[in-house]
Length: 208
Image 1: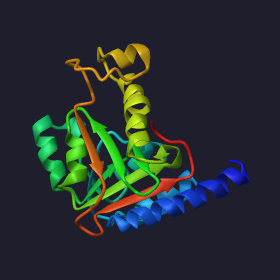
Image 2: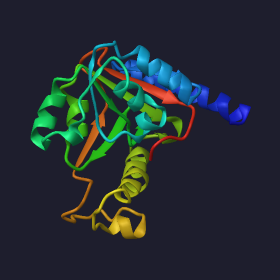
Image 3: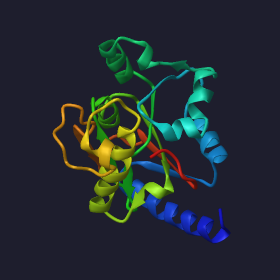
Image 4: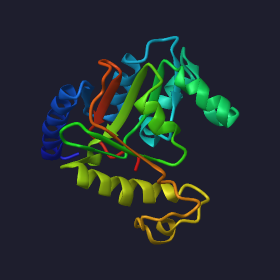
């Protein structure tokens, strides 16, 4: 990236980190995917039980491969009975995820279809590790919600065999389609449990 873009992103990350701290969450700045992976692994003790939600950002920095091939117990919910996998995840030591959007003062915004991802963020796993690229940072809740609905959700719909208006148009129709993937909205504005939610802000474009 251009040096001026890098500097701007670093300054933005510091603002977000301060916002996270005020909300009882911990933030970190990673100048590259490699730094993000190194920091993430520092936050996951060897021997931990790890699960994940739909987190393309964690995949793209190499974190999922590192966990699957490392000294960890990886709970692959896709290889388990849906109900069994859901319940097992609540007892995990670490949950890997991303955010659909966040504000520059540290509020996380997520949309979910089956609610496993947002429920794990809200309660359950002992530690939540969120990988967020700085292009997902918005100026306020309204802009973050618009991004989550019109960028993240409409892009995610392309991955699935669903029949929703956004899959055809690329924009949110606020639909009530039986296939909608926008069933639950989670706004995380504060963590009651200090040391539980950790957010790695990556100087790159990741996920959706």
